[in-house]
Length: 332
Image (tube, rainbow, N blue to C red):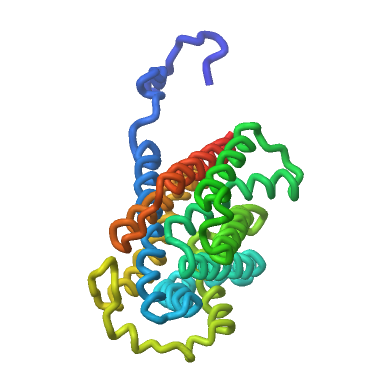
């Protein structure tokens, strides 16, 4: 404290008063916080690219005779086994938020993957994923109609653009040129994707939040259990994994796309995606995730020979633009 008799006096032997903080000293130093955004962006990009290859890796297995249900069981169960150490480390999450973990496994894992893989067994990979990316606009509708929360005009306009893009992708003017059941499965994946966003957000809220890594690990475990009960994997002919499969006219070992699907398109994709949210806000990470549809379309074109026409490409661009607008508007 300053002396009441002479504010400028300094007692003999006392340390000198601290120098006033300068603007340079007060300014934050570059460090981990400044590097967080580039790191988060890089992780989100890795996640989008990894997720984008799932359909391209799965379709040769399906065409070789493995059902879409057994293929998704292989993907989810394999990833769940790899992430068992993560689940054990966060085992307290089971008691803290069991409803979130169960719902995430049911919708965000089993629901999304089963519907998506059923869709790509009937329609092109790129089309299925573009339809699935109606999830963000559907999320806007959920927030507005179910939660009764206000939605910005930009988000509403983005949802409308995405729906118009979907009409171009499926060529509604030709009476739905793609398999109608395949389109319905893809729409089911989009609806389950809404559950992904809602439950991931719920896990971070409340007095007992759950680590996102735990949500991912236990979601995959729950999904694996559910899929085991419904798909009866012991009835599948797993011997085909020891043979080769066709990819755009070339033969490759079946284990190659299977391992890619489990380790890269699921384990790496989930871990980097969850980690990116630690450095970016979830809406921003979601916007970057829109690149998954672009990656999937390009990979299916190059590796599977699934060429899309001009209407599908234009419609896909509208779906991505609408989803981007809808999600980025949610940041405000």
